[in-house]
Image (cartoon, rainbow, N blue to C red):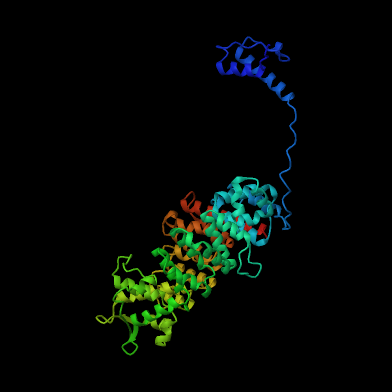
Length: 536
């Protein structure tokens, strides 16, 4: 029996071996006789073209594939306006779009703001952009909550058909639109037991914000089987929605075999001023600090030892800070005691207490104990979210020389100004930081700005722009303020674009500051258009 070889295979073999080693095959292809074989290489390509046409023309259609199950559920949300949809395509691609002149900042850094705004507006993206949205969320986990919420039913439908997007099925986006029930639903249980560790932490955090009792119930259900390092992060998630209802669980965690878990449980309990641990710390604090000298100073008597009860309450015998052990124990006790104990014991306000001298039985004015006491009070104010104490510890905002007593006043020294600032209401936070920048410039303002809500208020934005102008005029280089400049692109009020454009025009042509201001102005214009397209 004669087997007829496929012409395509013979041509393929000749191409692999070379026409100098393998002569052109004789073929019965239509029109093959018209091919000029004088140049074998050219002839081989022409024969391959004929064979390709023959193969394609002779292909039979394959049966149509079965539809992949039912179609995606309907999404009742209104679709994005067309300009906003085009903007999303630009952000997902990371391209530079029209934004008001100059090179724009990294557009991927503006994507979180766009997603959060679009989600808050209750809009949905066009179906064609949902795959790109899911790809972006797959690459950047911080985008997932907003991206999955925006993708909606179509996103979940697609995730069931593409393994790369399976994270969508494990991402919870439910908003607190209904009263807490205190009972976990099956979806909560499935994600908690089957999700990856990072997904479980995120899920627990979101549950605590939505329904703290459900989050605690799920954590309690698997607590004894979790690894120590996992228990630590799960316990830290209880900060959201922390309440007296969590005290029994946290009190039991004080006996955990992991010292880090014990310390975290103690810190959470100290944030509950009415907890039993807070009461025990209050008794120790009263012994450690008392009013003396007819109310003229505070006398410090640090703990003499770290007994077993103190250790169970989260205080480690050895200081991890390098300071003396008694100073360490003292700071831990005061930081964990309810701040209300001090006005109750002394009858003095936080401002009055902070103005007193601090000493011990040897030196009635010891700057060391004064610093330790102030630092511990600052930690307590942050932990307990006490605005009165945070305000007193920060002190009044700095005052420019022209408005005060002739010289700028600095805030009271403390180890955690940005953390204390975060305890204050957003408007007060922004006003304090604006005054600080006006007097002290941007050199020490990075963490303070990070504590302010975004976008920054117009007064704070104006203060930042003015400080940048002063920095440019002083001869400093832009990269010396790179951290703040990176924040301005995302947080500066878009209304300051005109002022930034004036700075770009006033800077020396082709200078680093001219380029920096032009990029910032272009980004602000881009953000303004972006928010306007979303109806904001």
